[in-house]
Amino acid sequence: MTSPTARGVLLDFYGTLARATHWFSIEQALAEHGYALDPAARDRFFDHGLDGLEHDEHSVSRDHYTAWQHERTLAMLTESDVHPDEHDLIAAKLREGQSTRVLEAYDEVPGLLADLRSRGLCIVVCSNWDWDLHEAIAEAGLTEAIDVVVSSAWVGARKPHPRIYAHTLAAAGLEPESVVFAGDTWNADVEGPLAAGITPLYLRRDGHWPDGTCPHDEPRGRGVTVGADLTAILDLL
Image (cartoon, rainbow, N blue to C red):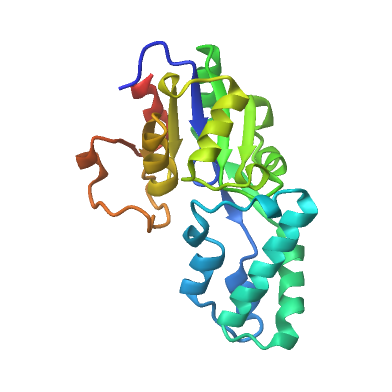
């Protein structure tokens, strides 16, 4: 349990603060062309296969980062046996589909963040996201509720790499023993924070997509607090 002198909360974004209620997915784009995505390829190029990676050379600017994303998309399409002549068209559909995305905060989040701020806590987002994390937070209507925002795209290292936690704590002016980290991915939001000396809260929301990084059927057995929603963070403050 954290000290009663807790000064801040570090929060993952997607799956923790907000989720997509509409998103034109790579699966949809491929289905329109008669293909199916290789799940192993997706994981390797865009999901947990990237966790812990350093990518400083791609974090020089937004242009560098989006070019890297495009390269990964084409490599994923290649591994899914998509004909090369269709690569650029499918990639363009994905970019266009991004404009139809709808991100919404989970029901308890706005009120909870207001409560945490009323307690004098610094509200910090630390996310394995793309370059446009500020825009995503704004889509979810949470900009005014958050004090510090850190994306792996800007840092050049993805959770659970230790650099991103150190960067986030420094940006917020916080010490590891004075914060709680809440998130829905075991390796990025539990193992990484623990290694950094931060107390974690592991979210297991009802109906949430499976977390392939969690090797434990019952995470409470590891001495980690598990919550059905973000209000469980109050038990650690």
